[in-house]
Length: 470
Image 1 (spheres, rainbow, N blue to C red):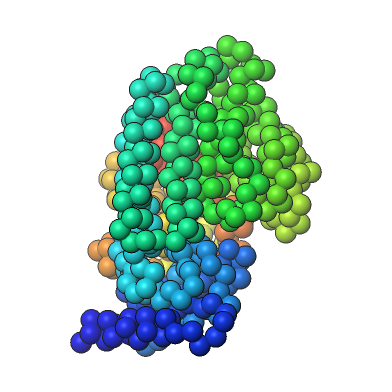
Image 2 (cartoon, one colour):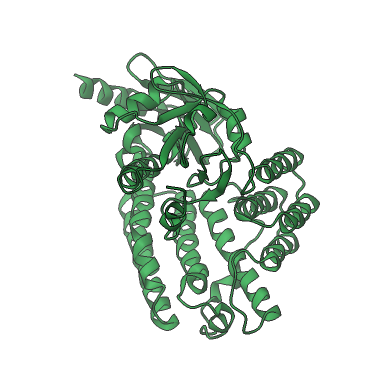
């Protein structure tokens, strides 16, 4: 019965969207959410105009987009989001399970085929990443041939798809850009991922045509200014451009990701090459917060922060970055861990100090990073067996209340031992400067910080645990 009703709704929408009741183009967007994590779906267009759509009693929704601006939109549910191409008179219906957000996502209705193409390509690229990381250890000629082969294969697949379904020029523009952004990114990361410490010498050894596509780079692309794949490519590109400059200044010197010069050069290159304020501000913010989160030198952090503040035009971001920097400074190794309240899954409230009675590791999870959550839980369980003298506390950072994360643990058949959530999520996240999501904090039995930003999946992590007091 459910399938019949859903199919019937699709027919109604398709029929409705093919009528020309007015001259202003419109479209319909709807669907069904399995295991919803909130009562809403938020649809955002390229100009960041957002519509909040409420789920009904059966966790379904339908929304008419009036005065449609054709192009890429994004929809968000809970902490997860995905991109979707909406064109005039589309009637796109989705179905997804929040426990496997991207993997379960399928579309039906008018406009579904192009978006199923995009989500399938997205999942294929995710699977391909590990393979490409291995390819990075090949010599430059072989690596380029492999990447070019993969890129040409994707372009031929797109050509066959376009011939079969008579897609629009807008679809082709975005689909071709997706492919080029992805594989050009693979070339940008190559010298940084290739084994060896002397990156400068290796960079000079690359074939002359290795970066031939660079002559066509648009650093200020208005059409793709809010497009995730475009920003990912630019991030990788500026990493490599900065490496080139670093290598010229530091000949025959071992490359250091955390070098102040390397990171300052990166901000300067962005400032000199990117003029579009939205694109520039996003890139500056990304690289600055990443540097600050891992830096162990307060003076260098201040230099990078001041460089960022001098270049960005986003006043709100300036305040956020300054506050983030101040929070990082309060979390230096040897400092007393800050106090805050957590809630267990029986709705009991605890001061975090009451839970730190021996060396303690604190990790974090969010529904937005569901795969990380599952891997973290299993990793913690194995570490608990090896290090019984250490308490492992895992905190959910979402602002859903305790029922949703409790149900997620239950669905995964995980127990709630040492599982908590923040009583005041936004305030606590700012206090602990939680970025990136892999951030792990080690505290000694005296509630002093041993490491404010390590990673439990890093090779050196267990060496850090082994040094804790027995």
